[in-house]
Length: 446
Image 1 (cartoon, rainbow, N blue to C red):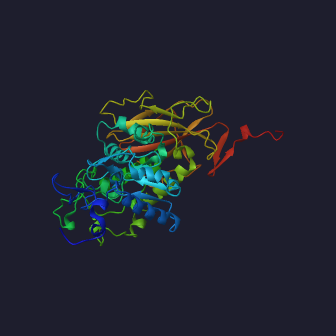
Image 2 (image 1 turned 135 degrees about the vertical axis):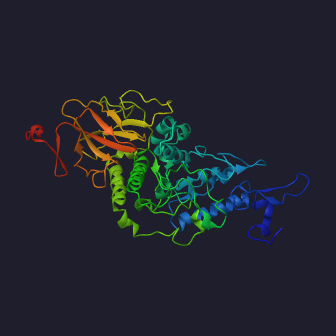
């Protein structure tokens, strides 16, 4: 019963979702957002207000699209307030000639409902299941392999049944809410004491691991492991099918000192320390090279879901899963922490000479002896990435990948990610340039 603010004084019942006793006028605000009130998207006045605002941003401000915070609120309606993917607001957007061409991204939850995978067909979503699975697998939790396969390949279990594609999965490890990437591998628990709420604010379930020391440390072994895990997470994010989303500052190990709810801090906790770029130049370079690697191979930007079939008659399926012994992965074995898979890159055309990519994701505490698929005569596996190696060696420059010797296996170090390339016969790599080898030179007569 406070002062009249905003739309409350115009038409409180129309603009806000209200509740109250059945025998009295509704007067109390539904709190789906955690901010004390929620707009009533059953109301034509609210829909008209929001649609007009969005059209203004597209037509006058020339924005490409929108990311909606707590977007499940947009689908709530009716007396019970349940979420519906066919809500009046979603229908209005899909029918609007301006907005149905804009990018629509949902944070698919609010404080009372979790709707990952349930938004309309023309919406993309922050994939919280990708975040959680990758975090758990990355720190070595058991029982992650089965879900890992879905997340790496665009989450068809969430987006495939309604006609959406891997593109609609906004993959992320970190975002503005929660730990930064550095803090994800540096703290077991949140440290929000300076927020003034006795460390009770912010999420407590972070799926983080401090690598053996809470917060700042000078232990070289701990620091090396932390950087290795950060590089692993970069690979998980950028090489998985879907649309990757990076948190600014992660590329140079920005820290919020363990604060996972730092929106209220306007100081060194939330500021960007740009001097950290030079202190973490090897991580910065790894990010740069990983982005370049994704651009280099279009199959890593595939909007469609993999089928596990030979699509170009080269006897190689577009995706093949392997266990370390080249058998089928033991998806249901909770104790397995290593997964291998092969992608057919022969039709990419972006890197002449490379026909396959082979990935080893090892979150196990022990090294894994991994048998490599046979390539046939003239083909050789080359190491492109090994996150267990020091900076400068962990990511080979294009055309300078290291031949695997012996060629039949690779030993993946504990908690590491490895990417190998298979080269077509008839191509040689010299001085970083891919050229036809002399023994397979083009016939001048055609």
